[in-house]
Image (cartoon, rainbow, N blue to C red; front, side, top):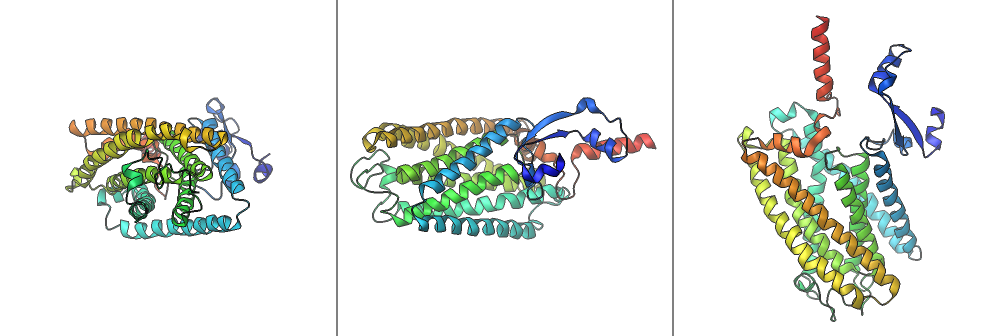
Length: 389
């Protein structure tokens, strides 16, 4: 039924490298004992993406998360169906952002050769990952600067950040104004963030390298898309601005850490940049995401939802948003535990690159992209060559 692949939403593939190899050489026997069914509902995207198949570890969960994003995007477009200008604005941001991502990757691929260490350049995947991470660094810096501007305006003066539980006029939870329409700058910023996080989630599913925290990161992206879209529809843009500011600003050091690791700028190369950025990242993450975010944003949000809401639908909708905010706290704790495990490897005399590879990179460290074969393929080829000799 392969001829139906472009026409249907559900295909069943049988993944087995040994079976494919046997068919390739005309062997009708094959090693059928290793064949296993993998549900793949996005197979029609094969010519367009790097990862059309669902994650082999849990394809059902992978497809559910992807389907959730698509359904939520449909709901957001449906909510602005009566406002053509919002449609146009969303489409404009999408085109501009996709073009920006492509240009940013191309630029950092070009300059990456002079930044990435000679040792790491031996594996082309390191240069590709370096470029893949670059656009996230640029967008996090840009969005942080934009958030600082919005929070420091004369009409705000950081009140939303300093007093996140304020219910009075001009406060974060002021229900006497239409936060989505009375503040055009905040509205445009919010729509831009919605596009950014939607594209980020799609990129994570279909393009980016798959690390050990693939499902945790994918769940985070889905939750963020739901939060940005939901808070826009329910009128909670001000609290969303503070949440995004805490995330974008703390992600800058995460991006720098990953890029330094891919570039091989660690102690082994004599630079110590990876180690220094890692320590800075531990501090900023703990302050922004484990202290300010849960205690100064999430808890006041739960307390203010009732007084802020004007209808029962809005109240329960915002309670659902608070549940997603709490879910992000759990993910932050999980990630910080991962950072602590990497720190333990560092203090036990393991290199930063090796520590990141063991705790975070996972299978992505041996991806056969850009012409470089996976590590296990190279090993098997050498072993087979020796046996033939």
